Length: 537
Image (tube, rainbow, N blue to C red; front, side):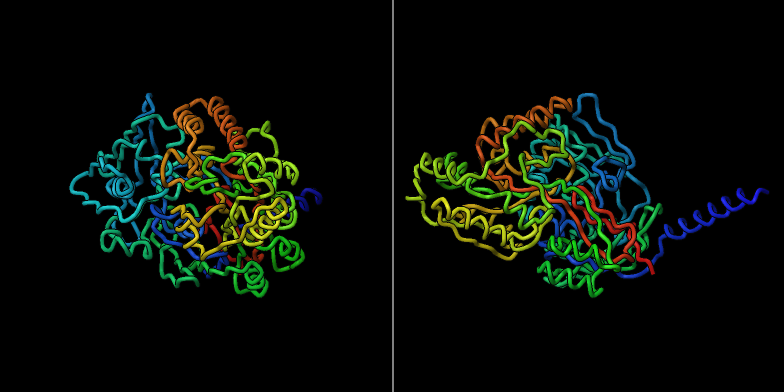
């Protein structure tokens, strides 16, 4: 054989063996994930925050999955589905041989129970005996804010592995919605043992089982050895989610090797991570929006558009993005990210102008801020994908408002309390920071769920605008993608004109981790998926 050919063949084989050896996952080990705050609760029907959902991402599963690093759908607990020609009937064929972590079988009745318990009018039918669904202890916020009661007429288990959803109306995002966390399937048996305690003892079908929760410290999951999907992991024996609120402390824990992945580092720490031989970075443009909202349940915010516009022009958003996001953010033009269809490039970028803000303030009836009492600006206590340091952002905004004569002070609470009180729209709240990471890649999941207060009292921004509500309804009931995109472009322009919220930034998500962490991937929905992650020895 020719020596050159022999050498090339040997090199190719060596390279192939090296790549296969490098790519071969190694089972075992404990991974410690450092995050910015603790979970609020662990029942997917009742939570809305990412720190709660990241546990659910590994404990629970839904009928449909989003592919890795994509919002494209693929079969999950449902192997297949069909949609009737009129768009009003969805039939799902379920996987067989799947069990919950408590050993009980996953079947059509479990699906009917998991979604039926969230319905206001429970038009459900089990196959055989089924269960009696207990009354709701509290509002299932996601189900309500996404108008699922106005969409779903009935849910029926036709046989042990077939579920049929009958809809009241055409709902273009319905299938994508069923991949979201609120649509996860739980063990009815585990829930009925103690409905109030399920929020702290979740039982699903996912690749990891819940072990324990030490409040404000850690949540421990362990490998589900009976996991149904044999195409990959889970490889890790355990995953520990540690709550470390201070960004700098969290990065220091990574540097010393006490954690493996650092969520939401300070932007300055990203540069340090690049230089550290023990670390690597994963990065992705965020499908998110950070915004400043108004309390639309009280005056003057409810009806004074000029005042809302004045505040928008008074805040130096670019300075906030430059100095606090530090290269990890993009100034927002719309309230959906620029990578999403329905984005409107024609919407003007909000100009920072003290002069314009003062002029609008005078038109609003508060020249130089006179007649406007000191206002509160609620600022988030934890780092989020769309806002790296809520308290610093709040301080910067208060300073900007002072330049036009508006007196404001920062208010903050523990994260769970912050979310609960903000949802209640208390009279002592004037402005509030919040944000969103998209759940399913559909503009409806931003524009309707966040801002259409006429759809539900559960919408956190209780802005009531008939024209906007009509656009949201049309967007859901229109199936042509091009027409839907035009509807959402109109909605984005209306948000600019009425300014019910002030879009601040879309962040780039970049997390440092130890080099021994393999196959950890960021997801557009901010899901934290540990199924295929493994540790290099």
